[in-house]
Amino acid sequence: MSEAVTIQHELTADEDLALRRAIHAAQVMRKPMLWFSVFCLGLGVLTGVAEGLEYGLIDGVMTLLPWSLLGGIWLTFATVPFSFWSRHARVVGKHERTLDETGLHIRAGHVTIDLPWHAMTRTIETPEFFLFFDAKAQAHYLPKRGLRDREHRALQQLIAARSPESVRRLGP
Image (cartoon, rainbow, N blue to C red; front, side, top):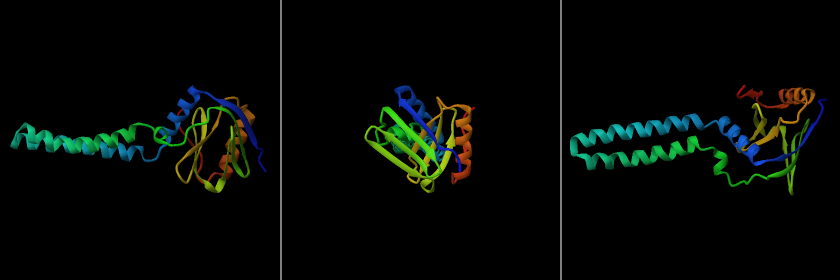
């Protein structure tokens, strides 16, 4: 049986921003959305130029407009982190997070979350956090700051043994 690791920390605004960036980098749908937006923008430019050459400038701009709007909307969703669109506000303040044989347990303010291993779809290690994604693609995190080497290795071993998808590392 692996050792449980408990981390007590206070979520700061800077750490919250770093967390949002780490989650954004790990999002699965970001690249397909980016390619679709580039496709829409390119198609809009091509059809706009073709219409403009054949029927005049106004027709070319009117043909370009819907494709540009469609591509722009998808480009926005692809480049702005999904966590910014989330309805769930982060609980800034004191947190206690425990990872053990049963899963991830979070206590923050009046909020309690228990995420069992079978509910996790993937786990990612970044330079600053361990990210645990549930079935709704919502990320829960475990900060690495303040971890001793022994605790860090214990976490990696526990995650490797219990995580449905092996740990992927992002960044250095």
